Image (tube, rainbow, N blue to C red; front, top):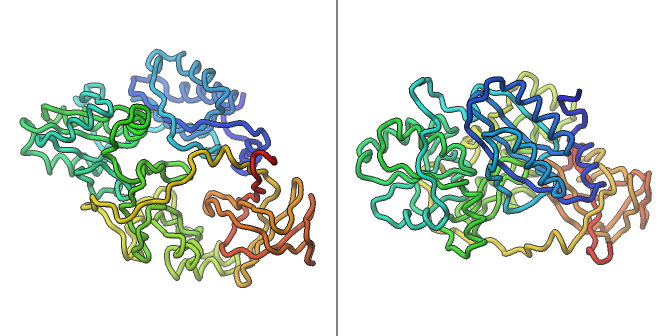
Length: 455
């Protein structure tokens, strides 16, 4: 009986590309009393692994919190696996605004003490005694009420790139920090103000609304389904968006654009920008905002120190990071002193710039075909080495280099060296090199991009 992953992320990505099927990125949560979380976890893994469902899921005695990628043709079968449990019957599944077949590449289900860490130790606190749920238009209406206080229950790096107009955006690093901070700020408004709250998908507000009712607040409301469901409703119903900017998401995309307003700055040069990235130095992985120009100049690094590090021989890099604990600190380190234009807490409400409007049917009008994998990058000469594993690659072809840290980088191949010499066309089995203005990693894949009608 298989209860854990047997494929690497790279192997799974290749299988997804070879299958050529569309996948749906979605999220859901449910608070419930689960007597045996480990047994529940194993049951879910068996059922979801059979459907090729992937994602990051936490289960605890208080419920389940899931962000997932599911094959589109298995969507109803996946929903059936939820209907087995009474507390998940008819549950709302928040489907992402933007779809990416590689949003999750493993099925990871972990048993935790709580599905949302809150730092609370109070047996009298009932998480099911929640606030009133509001749909998008209802939320907008209450926002306009002068007697309303709206609070963003996300972290500083989330609210920095997008938030609701007029919202309190706590300068916190995690959910458990936000509860006492907001409680202290609002002590004088328990009786006479509408406390309106929101988060990404609703799970943090579900607990926060119950907490503030427990603290004596009378008029507590929350955005049903969070920003994800709000976005779906405003698009389908033609409702004005009171949310400006991007919605931060916790898969490799790191953001979904809700409006074309850019309210954040590149943390290195100050240019209007709201694209999060992780530092290319494997001993750092700092989460920060970086524009295309700084990404090219700094080779996806957050500082000159990290830039120097990635140019060292790999063995020396491994030695330097020995003993360092990165893990979940990638988000907390977002306040690093190396970031000169980092903003937290009081955030701008007026856009700094507008994002370029992209063709929303772009994924339909082009096709990418996996043709190879990264093998090496020569930092000093900026030369990338790939192994061609499928089809051919010729001078003039448009390619996509893609990876968890590298992101998606498109370019036209102007020169190819095959097995050490110049060549017009590389074939399956050839080891090739060509110039790249950015560093690649062993997890990166090489795709050939062609118009769908010619594919």
